[in-house]
Image (tube, rainbow, N blue to C red; front, side):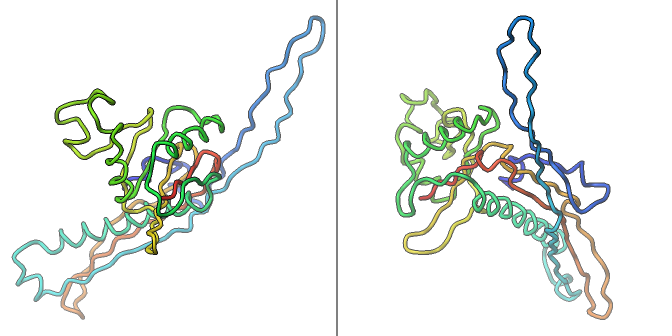
Length: 253
């Protein structure tokens, strides 16, 4: 999972029981000039809340028949349970991508145009204007987006970034960090096959979305005599909501 660790988590608020998590949305306060011999000026904030509904319940199951297991030269149970857990984790990561892409305030760039420095700087500016903290900003790109970024000279040249040897992007193929923002590649972003391909990359702050995982990926097995095999099931339960839409920028390419 790439995106799930990058958003705000509320797992502890829901793990014991319940179907929803309420997140307070605190307004900014105003500092007022204090005049001698006068009362202070009270702020009168109007507080709202966001609600995370725990409604994403997924399972992935596979039945391994005895004859297949006996004749296999490797541990099928271990391989398939790993695959099952990965399938659900991938679904959770894609859920975060779809939710943020649909509800973010800002969208820049255009399909068919390659990623460039101007749109990345503009995305960073959007978060600055929204007063998003400088830390905990992330930039997630699709595989095509990674290719496009590695083609931008200033991101990989030694004379531009001062990084050489195996840590240089030319050597390790990783973007690393740009303008203080960590860059990640994810196959779980919203990408639509079309002409041209529609890539939706995400530039966001951690507080842009809240995610609550009530039951993380759990693996179980059961002997099924009627099928002469063993059933392996994985499951997970979670929910999420965009909490600060102005902390999310979708970049098209």
